[in-house]
Image (tube, rainbow, N blue to C red; front, side):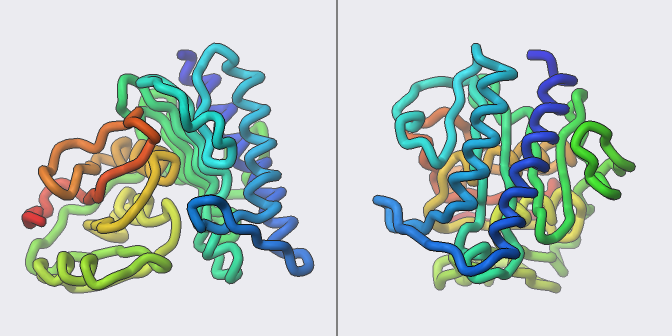
Length: 265
């Protein structure tokens, strides 16, 4: 894989998809449909998916593509592939809360090695450079000319005063019970893959997810967090979260900065 080309393409497609998403977000009321798994989907999900999937297939026709909005891709079996959630955090989008992202990642042998997470309503853009280092870009987000970037890195956690981030739309008692095992200084709520990025920038130390997710929800954020020095492990045995699983479904997991004293489930 040409990582320079991959980075340019993923960044540009995320921005193009973000523009379309914001056009719908800022427009009149939009229809919300329900998929077979009871999750919501909007015209923004579908339009963003069309932009990203067409762009990735044109640029990398030989690479398997898995995308949330194309059910036929979910039956594929691969360990190296591109994976997309064109609008992660649809509930946040529907309620116009802003915590939604465009997620694009490249997985090699079950490991998310490159990714981009773009939060268009928040004006935040995170991605991995060709060498794997994660950065946050600022500026105007021109499609073909990257603006200023700054390397991001995880915090040095204080286990007596941890900063925790948890889901805004999927918080439950099981999550709270696990969080209560830690000495918490500050608690943030965030939607979508922004939770991974908050750990990657040092704005949080740990994100436990005791609930259903799919690989397209997590791969891009996982790649960004890895490139900033963080880890994502299974909730049950603390082994690294792997990708390319049957059906692309995830177990419960914990994303964290090294130095956090992980508690058992």
